[in-house]
Image (cartoon, protein in one colour):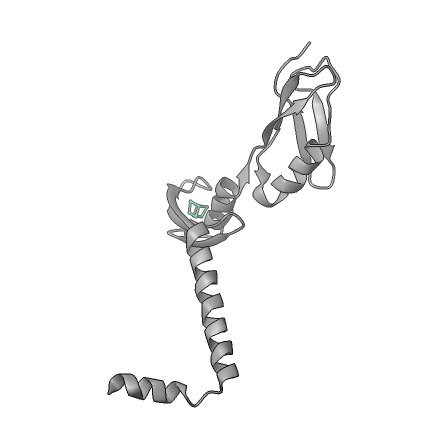
Length: 152
Ligand code: SF4
């Protein structure tokens, strides 16, 4: 009986409206599933000042979703600094057929990684390569990539 009432309620919609509702719900579920799959959780003490607040953070690859335990906005900034940045380290070909490892001097925000790697992928290094030598620099973002090894 209960089942029939539910069917009766849905039947007030036209077939097109039903399809639209089902489509919207499916999209919402898929969006949520995607969010859940990429969302991560971690905890660590903030080093922003002597209070050492214990932070509980939810984040994905692009942004900090939520921070608990912080007593000021410095905790959010610290979390972003720790979690949304990473150094780039990659091997590039040299003109004599070898490879040299290069590394960014600082951790880079994750959203710049693809663009940075695309630029690096176009390079072929001349030898000799000296450790610490600047390989590529982007003055707009301040990203600097240097050789991580000697290759003579
Ligand atoms: S969250 Fe704020 S108050 Fe707490 S340790 Fe970090 S900077 Fe200090």
